[in-house]
Amino acid sequence: MAFWGIVLGTLLAISVGALYLFGAFRRRRPKEPPLDKGHIPWLGHGLHFRRDNANFLQKMQEKHGDIFTTLIAGQYFTFLMDPLSFGAVVKEARAKLDFISFAKELILKVFHFRPNEDTHKLMQAASTKHLKGNGLEEMTQAMMKGLQRVMLHSLGSAEEQKPWEHDGLFHFCYNMVFRAGYLALFGNEPIQSGKEKETAKQYDLAHSEEVFVEFRKYDQLFPRLAYSMLTYTEKQEVKTLWQFFWNLLSVKHIYQKENISGWVHDQQEGLAEGGMPEYMRDRFMFLLLWAAQGNTGPASFWLFMHLLKNPQAMQEVKREVDRVVKESDQEVKPGGPVLSVTKEMLSKCSVLDSAVEETLRMSAAPLLIRAVMEDMDFLMQDGRVYVLRKGDKIGIFPYLSLHMDPEIHPEPQVFKHDRFLSLDGTRKEFYKNGKKVKYPTMPWGAGISMCPGRCFSRWLFLYMSPNLGTVGAWLMHSLCVRMVPLGT
Image 1 (cartoon, helix red, strand yellow):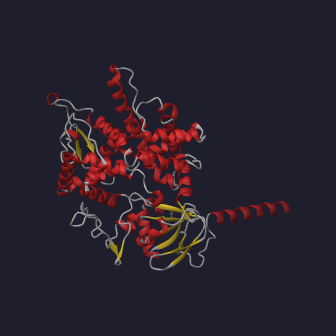
Image 2: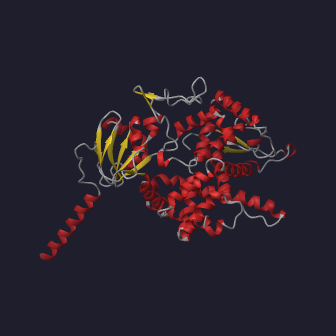
Image 3: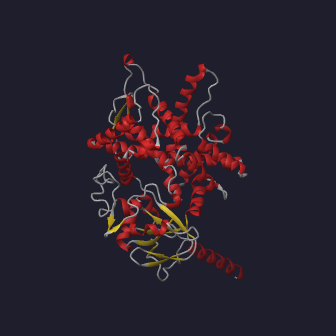
C-alpha cells in the first residue's frame, strides 16, 4: 500500500505541476489587464489565433477593450489595441520591455540559430553600412543587375517571335524579386573564362529558381512554426528544409561564388572573429536570406496589383518616376545600362512613397512583440494604469488597431495612392480622438525592431516603377501577366 501511495502521490504532483505549467492556475491580479485563457489547457486560444489572428484580436477587443491578456500555445500575450498608447511600448527601456530577448527566443525556434552577445550589434552595424546612406547604392546596383538577369534573360529580337508565357502576378513578383535578391546577396556562379559566361548565367537562373521553390515551402510554414503550432509531418518538413538551406548557404559553399554582397561578407567575418562555430554561421546565412526576402516579394505584388487596378494612380506614379529618371540624365530602355538610383532621386518621389506606404498599410500585418522583463506599471494614453507581469509578452498588431481604423484612415479598405500627401505635396498628419497619431502606419515595425532594410525596399520600388505602365513592353516582354485570386 505504501508503494502505491507513493506512486499515486507522484502522479498527482506531476499532474498538478503540468496543470500549473499549462496555465490552469493563473488568475488575474489587481490592476492587470483582463485575462482570457480560453478553454484548452496550454493551447488556450492558439487555434483561433493561428486560423485568423486579425479576427481573433478583433473579437477579444470587442469583449475586453483596448488591452487584454490571452493564452496562446503556452505563452501569455498582452495585446495593446490603442494606437495612441503605442509610444509607451516603443520607447520603453530594454530593462523593462525587451525586443532582443524575444528575438533570440524566436530565431532559435525558427532557424535553430543561437546568437551570441555581439550578434545583434554586428547586424546593426552591417545594416547601417550597407543598407543605408552611400553604402546602399552598391547594394542597389547589384539588385538592379539581378533583376535584369532574371527578368530579361529570354528577350530576343522581334523576328524570333518567342511565345508569350503566362504567370500569376503574385508568383511573378515574388519569384523575380526573390531570385534577383538571392543573387545580389549571395553571389553568382564563378566564370573561369569568357566561353563559360553564358553557362554560368544559365546556372544562376536555374539554381535561383530551385532555391525559390524550396524557400516558398518554408515561408508558408513559418507563421505556424513561430507559434509552435506545426503538425508532426510539418515539423519533419521544416527539418528537411533547414538542412537544405544550411548546406546550400554554408560558408564553404557561398565563398566559392563571386560578387558576394558586403552585407553578407561583413557579418560572416564578424561572427568568425567572435568565435562562432562554422555550423552556426551556416544557419545564420539562412536567417539573412529569410530576413531579406520574406516580405519584399509579397510587398511588390501588392503594389503592382493596386496600381494595375487603379489607372490614375499608375499614371501619376509613372509620371513622377519618369520625370525623376529624366532629371538624372538616364533612360530606361531594352539593352540599356542599369538604372542608377540615388538617395536624391528617391527624395523626389513623394507620390510613389505615398503609394508604397498605402500599399503596406493595407497589406502588411506585422506583430510587434516585447518581452516583459519585470513586473511594471504601464500607463495608457488616457491615464489608465495596468500592471504587466514579468515573463509575459506584450504585442502590438497595427494592421487592425491602426491601419484599418476608419477614424485615422477614412475608408480604410479603399486604396488611395495619395493618402499620405497633403494638398501641397507635404506629408499629411493623422488624428484620433482629436489627438495626433505619431505612428500613422507601422509596416516596418518601430524602435529597435524597425526593419533595417526599409530603405533598400524603397529603392527597389523606385527602380521597378518606371515600367509599371508598360506591362507588355521590355520589363515583361516575355510574360503575359494575369490577375490571380488575392488569397494566393
